[in-house]
Length: 211
Image (cartoon, rainbow, N blue to C red):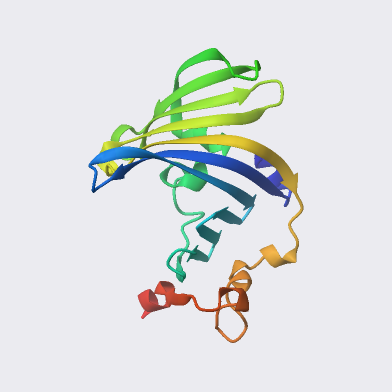
């Protein structure tokens, strides 16, 4: 992925995410499964699930929630934040090993019979990392991520106990000019949301913050 982004190409990841999420009414954790995709470019990210779309570049973040029919614009921290502090950084293989240290490595056999390497990682900066432990499953023959398991640090909240990301497809892709300014994928030239988002409420928290 890293070399593709440096060359100006994009990277497509399709995945299944399994989360253990706290149900406040039942006071216990329940498993939630979500399918999604990520498109990463050198200066942008786009993530889509059944309910949420997120467009992020160096200037803006547009979060589109289908269940509440709402769009929110906020200030981007894409290049200013440490990659281990947001979920997008988890997809970047190079970032994992920059911010976490190796605790153990062992061979793991998938159900398909493939021989995979499992790396167990812990944070370099202990309590300041949102993940207390990350297990990374890598196919050494293809140099591909197969699965990531993340145990969340309870110091940052107990809403989500863990995430498991199963990678189903990874490939390089060409990004056309429409990806150069992500605002144009949400907002029209007149400042209104595009017709495909008709009926959605729009909040520009970035402009309000400037005021």
